[in-house]
Length: 263
Length: 126
Image (tube, rainbow over all chains, first blue to last red; front, side):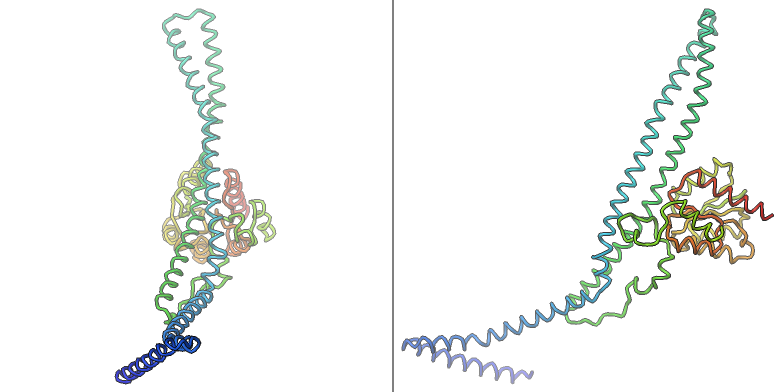
């Protein structure tokens, strides 16, 4: 719109308003209320028009922002499926690490008294052995010592065997770090994806009506499902979308599947 | 016997190495994914490969395929030790020529059993 034209329109509007105002005063003075009300509405009209226009624009923007939000299927998928899944995965990590700690601590609880008993027996034998070397033992005491040595050797073999088994239990329970690590890395990838999508959303809404998005497919769209299925996923987490996949539940299942393939 | 253990988690490599030592295998090397393992295999005269599946850069399945495609390595026995439990994946590994497949978490007995089985087969084939 041309500047002088705008000024002309403005002047015209003000003249009209002044005219309405004069009429309004006249109507009010002659107590013509209905006519006065009509004039007040007339005076308000340009402002309402502006308000409606502004409101209309806002509504349109909101509508389009919501549409583009809805159109971003990946973000919807992330919030609807993946975030609850991620919570379940992290809960699973908590319970796995708890179990692993208990497994380790249980083994230690059993191992500690065994080592303490072995240690106490060795101390006792050493003291008696020293007395024997100093020729302080009676025949009966010596016989006792000999039986003690025998018992010590027997239980030493058994106890160290048990200790070895317990240490092996502690060793195997450390596998949680790998298994939970894989699950946590998967959640980290999800958080990154959510972040990228949110940044994109902020970019969209700050650009207001500038809805020309770069044609950038989301990562999930760029990978065909068939290929994705064969990529490494990490451990199956119960109560997530993992459980809906066709998975084996034990080593026996794996062995059965492989033998059906001629292994 | 020279063995290469490939897993991106050092804790799992230590566990497998420990178990192998128990079984009498003392010459064990480590790699943290397929892309570091492959050059080692090509130069190192390894007799046995134990690999994870889910690893950065080069996954275990890609390593297995690369091994089978290499004329020098193609008959190297490969045991997969992985948390990947999809039937399709196990079939994929079998078709790619894996010699054994163990799902994590596994036991020391399972590892021993599968290794024994692999070498029994190899001996039987001559």
